[in-house]
Image (cartoon, rainbow, N blue to C red; front, side, top):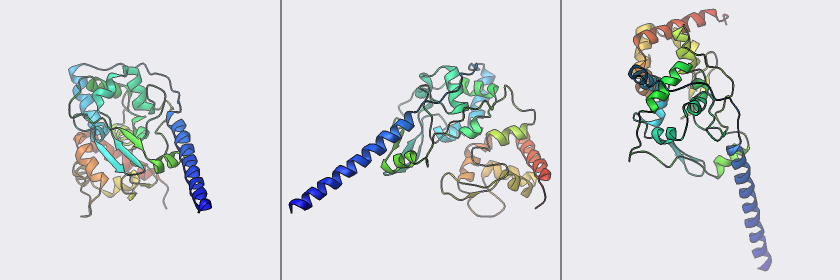
Length: 280
């Protein structure tokens, strides 16, 4: 009996040691500092800038992930793995300078130097400086609300193990990829910013929510004529009756804020790029 007790105690001690190592190691990786210079970007507080900032924030998914009024949204709650509630934008932005917010948007680096998780920096990295200034101008108009979420991001043991094993990484990109102004080719700009959070131009990916295949943009664009493409981006309804899942939610909540001209430019850009690809 004594040996059984000692064995159980040894197993408990080993489990505690493993958990301690996983927690300490993952915490070090979560808090790890990343470097990128603070950009010289100041909020555009003009009425036109704020209005356009609110629209661009919708197109780029900011309001889709943080809520229409920026109060924060529960994105996922997987016991033992991860709890993801996006922060309330007014409360979060209050502690940041304009330059720090611009670095957060472009590079996924927080004020303390640590990286963000579950934020689509791949697309945000290419939002033009002038649009980031407009988004920040809109952010500065938001006020804290009793409806603001405060539960934030938490990792369970399995989530921390995934971080330690490199399966779950911060969304950090320190490269200076953004231009000062929007690309003259509006279609290319939308593809590289708004669409890049989910889609590659030439390679398939997996959906963030259910792992289904996300087709490359150059496969999607040429498959639709312009009216059908416009319907896809405004409603999430494709050419078949199947539910497009995340694409449907993104279309209704985010991409529906694209203008007709922007949709036409995006469609034309994808068709041109597809024609440049070598024949298979």
